[in-house]
Length: 453
Image (tube, rainbow, N blue to C red):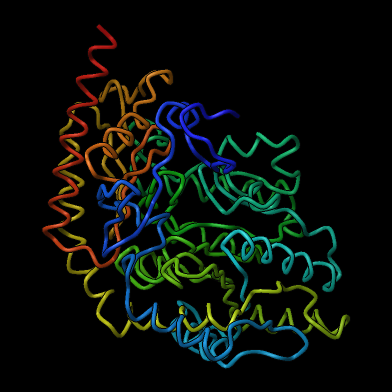
């Protein structure tokens, strides 16, 4: 890949190559509240919280102070061989108290990808030690996103995982995306759609063999799939099926966890009773790489029994449970839970969702969907038929690029444009966000109409 407009040794992940070749990158210089500034001094409202994660702003003093003090006290250590920093113990206790189910153990990693990958290893460890080594099949959904390791990329139900030959790995099965607007049959209600997906799940389990299924991975709201909230009754329909066949439910709360939906957990929002919860992005507000695996009491008991063969838990990462990262996470969770930030999410979310839904009247928007402080606008060429724009028009990328020029960062995801602003956003800033976005959409619509003429 050769970028024409700037000299750089840096290779950009998940970046639109034609845009890079034309304009080069935005070099981010500093942050202030919900805004970032580039190296030329231009200001942008960060409508995606960085990458869903910088929810407390880019200059949060409490987190900076927590990091500074932690670095001065114990700047680095590991959690192997029975040694651990106090901040890791304190964080574990706090996460357990806040967990959406009865939990009693936390295992840390360095990212959501690593955490989900580790869950697979734990599930396979259980299968081996419980005398069912063939119990290796993992269930996910199309449009899901669970990470970018070999295994978690396989769990991710997006076409781009096929860019690596052989993915997804054969152990993964993808079920229908729970996107009612796009996937439902004519006249099928949300409840009926949920029932059909539960039937599909049961048939998949029965046809595969229940003793071959290691676990079912589900985001409460599909995030990188385009902010797809579950249809009415979805988790109430599928959970009895999973319990019937003894299939563990892994709630991937990497995006939803710690407040994004307006509840502390997406599992609480949608009545999910998970066996395992995975958290990451918000746990440190992006100030430190971290992933967390929260185990229910039953899963802990099974894993501790399985580990007796090895006389240890045979997995871990050098920098997981990092003393500084754990100190930052304690401060971040404190800001959200005790510091009033979750209350702010609950206060401003109705205004955010109202303005998001109001975008439905735009000629390019087929569906406006979302929950809490997350939302998506699905771009269509024809509202009635839900026909997307031709791929060569790059409509969502055009919107993102024009929004950037107008001082707003939003994210193109397939045919959708996604928003997930920081939790500290105010109602006037929500007004600013949607004012820029509507102006941007009008500009792009004029471009697209001209291109089609």
